[in-house]
Image (cartoon, rainbow, N blue to C red; front, side, top):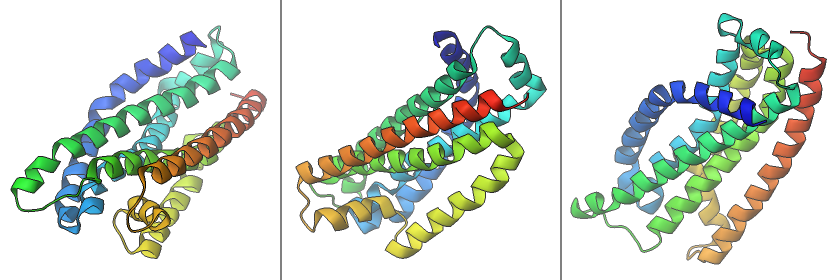
Length: 232
């Protein structure tokens, strides 16, 4: 398991510069475009990066499997297919968590800049940004867990065709239903009420985390069975 995970991390390190660059661009654009909307707008960039990262790293790792016959070569190494699957899921979770933390921290650090520019924030901005970023990452991870078995069953290109349309549709529906560029934050606020209690938001996020972990376990089990039966 450790050997498989270190192999995945080595691949992820090669992807970090490009993914981080795209994430920073999206963060700056969405934050500047929505900062005037208040707390929810200020966290839009962080939420977008948190939601983007799991999907991007999943597709990037799946694409790497198809390069230069890496997937077939890896199958010849003394690493079980179960370890390969578990390492893939763990690397996606770790990378997503790091990106979400970085995005939330960057958003929090930028709050004084908006305050000095005449865009006030409330005392809840830091907490809301943290919770909304975590919830965005967890919900995106659940989508990844739903799609990941497809990549191990059909390969990168076929699974990409099946999953991209689903991801785009779900994202558009969420933004349309909530009439917001930051639907996760607004959804959390609508549940918690006009004056959200941090304990309520924390419980909501914890509930989403439990659901995500449950789905991760199910998805990992399915992926393992599918990948073991697949002829590479």
